[in-house]
Length: 240
Image (cartoon, rainbow, N blue to C red; front, side, top):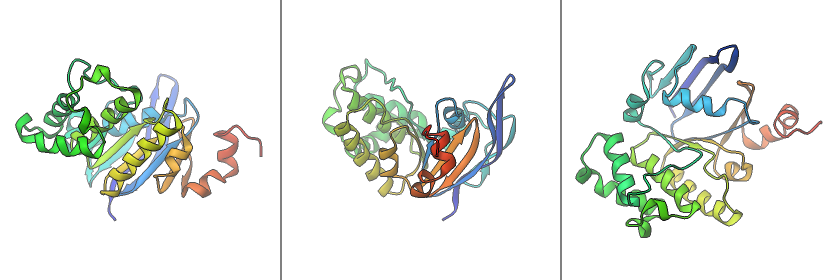
């Protein structure tokens, strides 16, 4: 499989604080990669670098064979980078369908009429079709998470970034969301997923990447990564 995303020696500092330190990794098309690490490890900054919300001080980012290192976020969305955020912030005064239509029209640069069929299919995939005419402000937390996922999918992503989308859910709600994400991945969606709920990650991803103080300290199959002495000591806080 060709790589959909490649980061090479990517670094980013804020003043004297180096938040991303020489990060390099690739994600093959169709794969699901999980990212874990303690709070402050640089996970969200890494997503912001991939999406173009911030630009690196050094290194390069390649998306589908094209150097996007200096491209702004809007251009990367149009190229196929979709993202959910840790705290869902839908347009609460719009319906679920209208939220999707806005995202699809922007992300795909098409009219609302042209994206209607796509939005209906996404609502079905994300188990929100029965909520299509519900105002987003009236949704439960699980359905708000589903809507955040659906809005990211509505931009037509080749690469889907999920930022702690399982956080705050009950075990039953988490399992329901895992099933939805599995279904999207099974259709070929490439996923990079930051998450603290480890069992949710390992139910979906084929590889895990571990960050600590902006550095990659592990990358490989989930079972091998979680068995690593360094990962357990740094991430889990267990003295081995």
